[in-house]
Length: 544
Image (cartoon, rainbow, N blue to C red):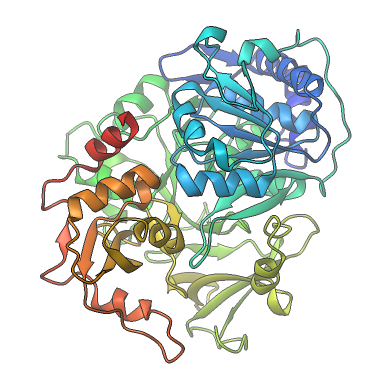
């Protein structure tokens, strides 16, 4: 079967349904298989509903849901109508949820029934939302009363699946807006055109050597780009199949890939380390997976991981804004510590001085900056944030915020982040959001959030430095409960450090680099060593 590497998403779905309609497209863990033909019919039924609801070409449609057949087909339906899919992180709540919804200015939202309390909690702050469609098909009587909004069931909006809107789509049309956290402000909506997501998928197909015979294990949620554009859309390009899961479980990973015959998967660096920490078993290598893509593929365990599980590791480097331009070549031996080589037919890469933008010599560390060689293959800016867009694209190069160096042989080595960006378990975290939630807790005059190294390579835990108001005494357990009720779970700090004052620059800004370097002190409160379970705290906040 010939891969359809150049096809845009709507045409890709139509061609697969026409040519391989009876072939399995995806199945959910614990669920049945869905063929390409069935997925296309379901997608057309949803697209008919979108048209009936008045969705226009270029309009944003929100999807806040776990991986499922219906959430995938809703994403595909937005592309058939020429609308823009905006997948909302299911961890968002409070201000982070409000910001994404308001910034997108979307009138229509699809949401899992279990997430409706989040929407109820921010309803009064929303000025654009008009219609809410609830998964799965809850009975109308069970739907909440949201004043000023039309709330309906998913089944109620479906057409009969007999017609396709066939709205014209080009590589320059926006396909998706993905919210990714910044360092000092709220999350930014990355505008991804159809040309970009097509290249994203092509890079995955070529970089991991995907074929029609592969089964891709995809637990990465659809609000992240890699699972969606490599796992699902990449499989569409080759005619392969996808096995959908909703969560990563270190204990269940091997049993599930064995049960479903999965041959390829994506794993973030900390997840690779978690699997490696399991007690070794004699049959670990008795599994169908032949290769994984990882960012990073931790150098200190890479060779042993490959030996133990019989899996080839392919290290990559990428960002939502630029796709994945750097890959460990599939046909070359692993290069420990390197994220690979540039796909130079698609991108230009330089390493520059972060302060002057002057190019650094070979082997010298600087900031990675990129630009595309073909139009519409990188992000078109941050949605409704022109100043941030201009800053990121200064001097006609996209500034990644990541430090690296390029060796004489062209291999790229990631070193660190330029700014105080926090990255925890593959989530980019905004210190701004954590601090904004922190200062709403009684007794806190000021706070600063930074990332400190976790037990996993290239991964952070969150440290919150707190200044109490005069005469106040803040209970860290109560503070954590407050933050869990107002932030996504991955933003809730592990550490709380009480200080008399924050170190400051001459212009009065907190010196976060100093706080990060100083890190966890003996007096710092640690949620884990104190026996506070984040899972229990989050459940309690959701129940209240």
